[in-house]
Image (cartoon, rainbow, N blue to C red):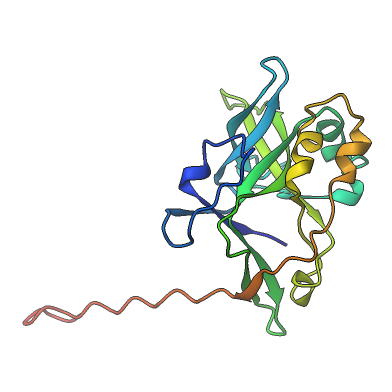
Length: 223
């Protein structure tokens, strides 16, 4: 499942995206998000009646150690059933994180995981569905805002490497997912669909180049 994705720095404080916003690939600062990092989550502020961007940790706190992110995903099929997610989903604690690319891991026979990158390649912001909660933690002075990524069955493209993928929302479904109307939770769950019919690319993530070993300075003693 997705354990890393990228976004553009210029998107971190944008909460509307009511108009298509395209940026040529390679001309903007790309930022990478992983579990435990702070994500810019778009939420619906019911009191102010507007969308806001709120920073949240990716990963709910593990029951025995809040520093560990576990879980980091929530299955869409049981999002309104499992105690860990049910109250947040039914209570409208639903958000959106905007992505440019995302990674999926392919299990290899050697028990290693090979990272693959799925890239729409068009610079258009797309929203991942997330759930969020506020955690009061023992011996921690401030509450922790944390979120998990919602997953769905894979598209034909992603099924080549894994059996789950992020729930990527259609632009028209943001309103229902965020709870901006009085629609029932069932309407929000209905927008969690596998995105098919897209002309995206998928390829193994390039390996980071190895750093050359530093050569000892002339005359330096080698121990």
